[in-house]
Image (cartoon, rainbow, N blue to C red; front, side):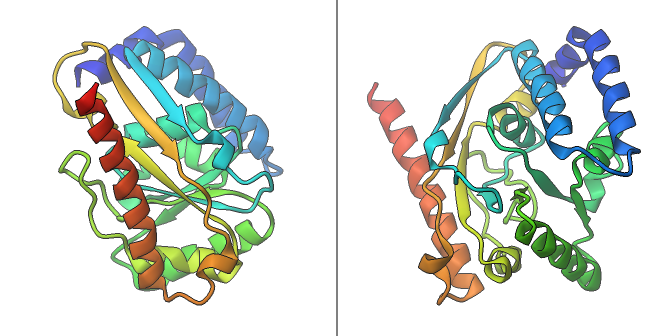
Length: 241
């Protein structure tokens, strides 16, 4: 809570400016997603600095050069999306659970970025969201979706990845970009405002040709395994330093 208050009061006037701009963008009929993305990127970078958090980002060279891909990271909390907006060189939209979609500012960001809200308790609505995502990815838009479905409450340990979240990649035949978040839970879960570091690793993209013969549950295990390996190797390196 302390770090959230630090962001709110430390960026108060800038937040009013960003909120106003995002509100305007959210009501535009012909949305310029890249313009909105660049605005939110600046806001995210400012928020992270104000929160006394240092970003360590690796693997930017692994992000596909052509649009029409999906980021699949592990999920540790609200700070995760800030890390992606601040570090990703490519514009993207995201899928968010219904429970978090009504938070002020986040609601406007969803509308401005063309992001999608998923009701996990409504199977029909969830399928519709995946269908919309498939159409968007085929139209060369990028997306981010948390395959765990909800945040892990065990630090850097992952929950099972839901196979259904990979249907969008399978049917749009797009590259999958596994992403490993490390210590992203700490800024908002730990008490105090002492400086800390959060890491984000963009792992090598998995082209459609590599997973086209796999079932969705097999892809889920593959992506989860690669993220877990990256996290374990990074934490092991830190122990030896």
